Image 1 (tube, helix red, strand yellow):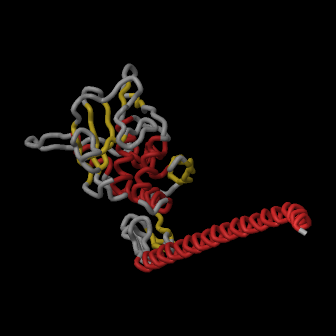
Image 2 (cartoon, one colour):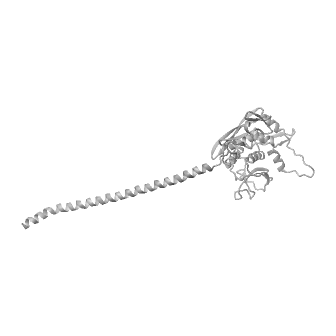
Image 3 (cartoon, one colour):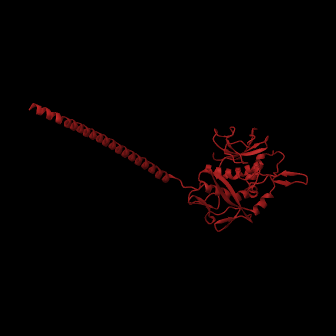
Length: 331
């Protein structure tokens, strides 16, 4: 009997061992699946928290956007409120764009009304020109109309100024005479309006104006004074647009006019030693040119605002005469 029991135990021992191993394996698998289940649950909880967080952030952002839009003042590029006449006649602010509406806003004393347009006596023989510019790395253009009638008129204006004996002539007088001509302003304001319609941001407006002038080729104009002699004559900004060319002083006067009408503080730098002119735009003192209160703008080439390198071969080193053109906003 004892021998039979021993044989039975010996026979059942491998079976028992296998059952034990199987049991341990099952337990290990259950523990593995349990651990996996816990990890998956943690992942689901984490994703849920992230999703809720995103919803909260999105809700806050949406709320801020709605609030900002409700508080936003809707104006055109020149600061005119929607559905209101601009100070520049005959323009009307319509959905963010300045449009001609002389029937509502009227015309200046220098023109007459025809429908919604204001017509000048100098708008004779239109000439279509293309003004190129770059903004934010993107090239674009403005199709603009200038007139033979006004070109003939302004090209014949005297460049002289009469002074009394006690008065001292100044370069500033001649600059202001050219830039502040009222007839010329009337004819050039459509270009200013077009710039304002191209960008709501005033900095971008200044950059467009700068780029337009820089893209006009540098070229002098010679008038025959006698058979043996020629002299360079200074042209008005309108003439520079019409001719599609200008020297540093002429192009600087054109840019000074545009920036002035865009409500910026503007000056002209005159460097006597280099016989060169550039534009200054009012800007913070830590960015200005030689503590002048103005950032340097070179008009003879594609230079950024603040870059005083006129050419690759030399820099303007002399102390400039600062000719104040207008007081206004800072760039």
